[in-house]
Length: 528
Image (tube, rainbow, N blue to C red; front, side, top):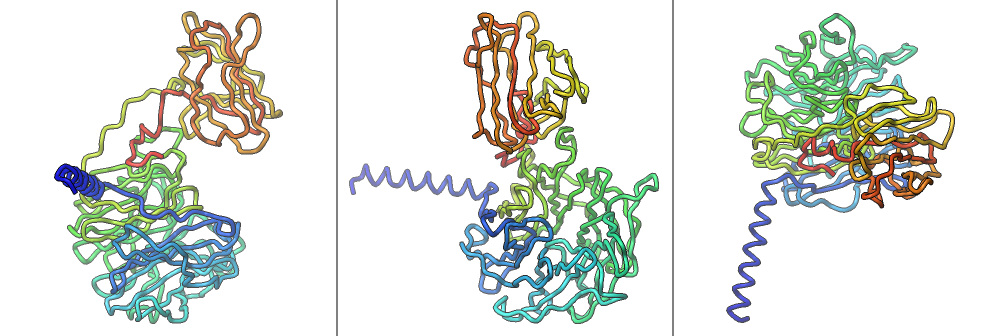
């Protein structure tokens, strides 16, 4: 090899190493567990370190084309031998379906005696879903027979233990935070939920329910949704903090001073949130990490969605949160049921990322969690100030929109406020815009969102040119649903005074502001 070649090789190698090192300081996606035929959903998993250096991730693997919460499922595993960077390619079935409906929602816990405790729900009916535990003394090669964790006062009921929720306290007590929705003899489920914990003081041999079995109320005394709790032990060693998925726009908190046996009345926390669970773990430096759907200053169109997926740090045991970062900012995403695996300098996050169908594992350097969040670009949606509701005539700076009765409305969608064109009684939809003085096609920065995947679907933008309607932009049946398509007019220099959007398709289409990108507003590290 010539000196020149050697120099080039060294320079290239150094550049590659530099880029590699840089990448190690940023979040990176390491595994995508995608739905497939006969596997409609992969969700609600948990991690555990094995003594041979591997990491095991066990998750719910739906084994049919039914991906709802009660579809048939097994519990499957993937393994990583390099700190979560890469994973085995095949699903290893750990527990075949034992329930009349499924087995779901895994928690893994390394006990103080060295065993691995493996918790999951066995789902039989709306009145019979209970947490079970198995133990392994040989690093997951074999497992004991399942043992139910609800034994008093009656083992029948519908109890929810979210994934990655089991904790063992310094005292040795195992705590399972639960929401109960029915008991034996109920005629209907109470989906608002009743909170409690299952407790074991002998390594999981016997279990009892906490003395506190409580509901949640807002500041006005009205009952609210309280479900899918999580628990973290606080530094003082005498208190537990419970995070509660709640209605009302916030995560709720409750505290226990006796190891989870009795709990304070739930109160709203500083964490704004939709009705979606939060996850929390302690980092090696002692700070708390929370992962949840942060709805502080969320665009109104995303008010009910589990978007974005954010992280935050608390240095004062959850009283305040800082270093808020958006990890996943795609407004079409659906991020929830996060498992957190804390390592020396990184955390692995396993979470649902597209509805509940797919699970993603992302490795996040702890240093990144502490970096300041970049500023999001200031953006103003041109439709933001329009009143919601149906219209036949609508005045905007671009001009006057007209539609048939019941044919169009101002609507909030995931891409922001826009004009939803859909005649409630027809599959053909149209809206016309009479341009304001001085406006041309080149001034219109609009985008289209297709609303439904039902075929057929077509859409055309037509301009009134030379005394006739002329197609200047079009979509067809290949157009993807819920995607932002900028309208690219073919004749930007023409000066027609009228333009018409006309389409065929179930539920029509939405005209959005093409200059506003809500993904940029959310400013996630990942926005795709």
